[in-house]
Image 1 (cartoon, rainbow, N blue to C red):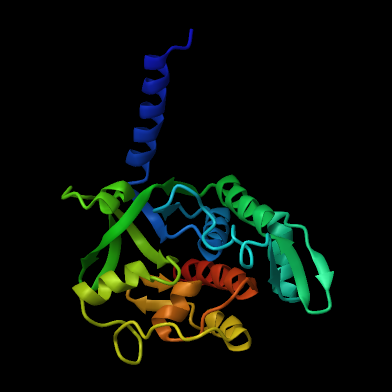
Image 2: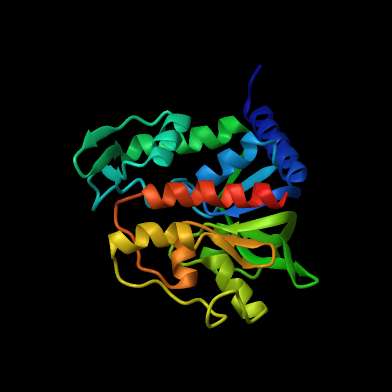
Length: 256
């Protein structure tokens, strides 16, 4: 017979089982936007123990809002993008200028694809620091996002990993932590170069080019990659984001 206490016990039991199981993983991805979710699926497809951490309650990053809250986004007509859409079961409408896809369907199916592949998602949790040993990132320091919002002084916990991916979008939060704590990234200035004004033609290619290792053990993808390496921002076009997520997964798989 179900009652309130039994319900609470079951929720706590499975939550703590997951937390304990995922204290040591192969890859931690910070940020459950499109590039982070795509990377997590392809990593998990290859039996890589993957944990996706999202500070908000909802996943999807900037997808949900489409273009100025109109629920559609655009991706390019590119063989690699067709393959990603097929892998996630995302429907599209072909127009002269690209493929139009539903922002709501896309966010939902990216999440389902990642989870079905075996990736684990923790939401409502923020990455506030990183673990560094011998000049290499080897884990993340986490706390409840609500603690951060409330400004409470609560000591965090740690999770170890072989690789960390900064997929936190415009703020590039993990990379900023590394700059503050270590002082130098693999960028021209050693700092966060900062994103430039919107320029779709350039940014869509540069987000893929900039998807790479920013510090030993730390990779950047999606808008975080352009923010860290100083490229223009994108608008409601997501082909580069999709390819960035696939690329960072491939790079980590090659390293492993």
